[in-house]
Length: 113
Length: 473
Image 1 (cartoon, chains in turn red, purple):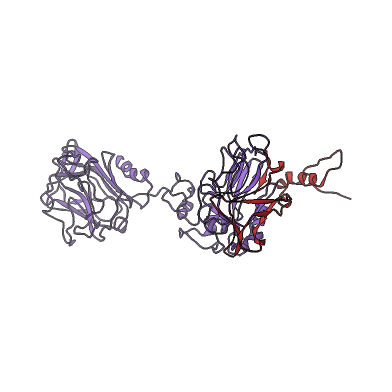
Image 2: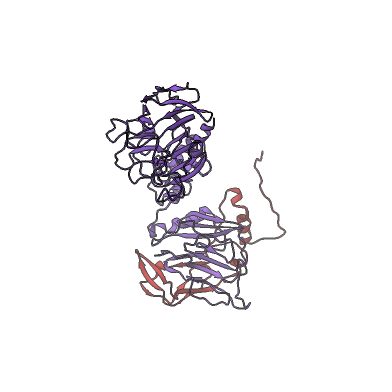
């Protein structure tokens, strides 16, 4: 049987590799081969649209893979903004402090927000 | 997020800490500052939104660091990119032990505290952070995920999903909506929106590089519509050219026009060809001598650009002595066109009637001719004088040197009258004036006199100098 194909990159490892290793190996050169990288779930995901109603907020739960929550400083408010429930910061002492940034997004690593 | 008013730097999400060294912070902003309005990492280069920031409307913003490149996106479309970027995001405060948290709406200081000056004043509904770089497609997909909720249109990257002849992402990035069509022409410059896209020009600007030539004119001429130094060369049409050098000395009844405007000039009274200081010229005695020539064309009527050059010999310069004119006196404003060799500070060089952009010869004059030296007059010597008007600015030159310019513009030159050498048409257009101006003996056109049409275009010095080059021939 005639086998006809092209090879762009081959790597051989001396042991089993994890799922993450496979994804990393794919992502590393995906764009070079016209592919999009595999994007996992965000580790920070904040979505105010699920709040039960308007009013003060004390914490904003992180539904991303990192977990934890963002604690309110000042008096951020949940407001209906053009039909969308959103957290409004007034620019005077309002912000929210979340979990510690993990090593994967410190140093010189790629990151997206 | 929705930001009612955009300050220079308003933090949306951050980690690391301010204070350096370079790259210690990740600050994702929605600010107007061109350098760090979008992303700051402490130390250059940061990045701004390149004018894409929008106030008081739900907006999807994204930032990704991919290798050593930072890219920022607005509503799923790339706004700007910057590289090389080197990050060294601090995990700990300066004390080396205090972990630095993620922060919504502000930034960590170096000591781990959070102060107020950079806090965001905005509403935030959704924040997502990944530990990987997202490419353009992934950003677009993420945008599309929630766009309808926030009143924004979805799009298929690179596709023309609305079948309007333009890629949807191009439409959104360029127009902010999906309403434009490929065969439309938003800026009405003659290039369709699709042609603008293929040429890389801005379909909302008729002259993308602001060099005075429209995008269409540049594409047609083969010049670069994105380079202000690349402009089409517009030919100058020499409408009237009068040469004295080959004339026989003595009375001159008809002065042949070798320009493109059909018709010679007919003498009134007794203009005379003489040799003065080694050059031939036609002498007008100031007592009824002038020439009436061909009728003007729209090229030099109304507000069209125009230029005049002349060699003259004026033995005694009066306040106002007309070299050549067209249109007619009497107004309304800007309706006459007369080129002078006179001392008057306001109109000794050019008059257009009324409070329009008249101009004198002396750059220092502002009031009294006697005080300011008589309008930089040159008497008893051959002098080259020139005038050019590009539709926006008037320039006058003596002996090839720019002496004065005036940016006021109010031209509306009367049409349908003949060009006159040595006088002006009366307001009724029936005859040249006889006694209004005391013309002294004025010798015209020892070598060349040219009346030029200048195409209305701020092509600058090239256009202004071209008549001079012709003259030197």
